[in-house]
Length: 230
Length: 309
Image (cartoon, rainbow over all chains, first blue to last red; front, side, top):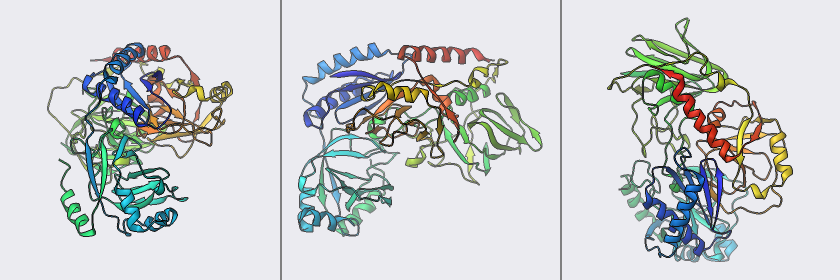
């Protein structure tokens, strides 16, 4: 574990330099330890693949003080196996209309459409962290056969809920936005609702299963999702 | 009490000091781009310093006041008029019922703050009134103001108007380099990269907004081309994408990113980033973390000393 100041108001705790479940678990242990710590001097926690950025009020806490808190919490939490991981099922309609790149992904993988859907919806994915934009999840666990490069030219507008593939990653666009991921389906579930508590469907460290649904079910679920998350 | 937006200006939003505690869900702080001017505006009208106020960018708004109100304008120099009469900046003043306040172009600086006694009444989203336009939430309906919008003002509470000591804001006007500390990935850069970064007069690109300010000038590149594992981004981080042109990540920034961060704005100079205009010239100057925190302490002490009741 390496602790480096990232700015006059933040500290970056680096656990390593690779994407691995072991490093992720250490990030989550420290992240959860800080969440339960409830220190008003700490303003924000940004987990990454193998690091945790801690943003704090430098007028009330020094880098050295925070650094020793990090060491204590890391020492205490490393021995605890985190059992909080929650499995969230996200329904996805893998319809060609929602997944305009589905054929492309199938062709590159030399798989049938059904097999692409089966491959994509069989793993239990890990939510490494959220970032980039509100509710956007960085997922690990995409089967290698589905790895597909992102589009050369991003689309100017992608509907919120679209499920896509970019390189070795798969993910969900939480809200309408531009983007270059290859789209293979769409979820009717709202991934981000600023007025809900919590505002995002998924939390860092959660597990995720995609569950294929047909168009009719998609539409029913979409109507139900008009209501707030909770 | 209500205020009607007759002209919205270029980009006017409701802001407070920002939304904290949600970065792990991908939610950036947003908040006033020049938090110092924002806080001063509130303190002048007698509000607590974190009451929702308007942030106007480059071209101000024209606002119709239904009832009389105590307001203050701070930040960028902006020609503001009540009919044909100019209204003063950096002081609280009373607008009569029916007043039409016209805020014009900003001649120096990029953002002007309008605080009204009582504060703008908008719902708190995740504990903050700040508008996050890229995510369409917070502030007034999650967006910039439009013609015809009607803003509500809170009127309960007791207020004591304050004023600024003469010459109090002189120190904000001094043209100095922006101060930075070295960033989380400083090891990725050779000494020559830092020399370039600190010797270049950068120009703020037109493609700059509350998300980030793109700087044009001396190229800064990491020693070798390796990929950074996506990690958290602090406010004011200076990241270097492949083209070697630094970007100052700002209040609406993404919470994580994959470009190396060579340096970071000091907290005490964030307010100056908020006043940069496209085509402004920017120089960067390195200070230690200890100096940066000392500067922030002095700034807070200064702020407490410039206002008199």
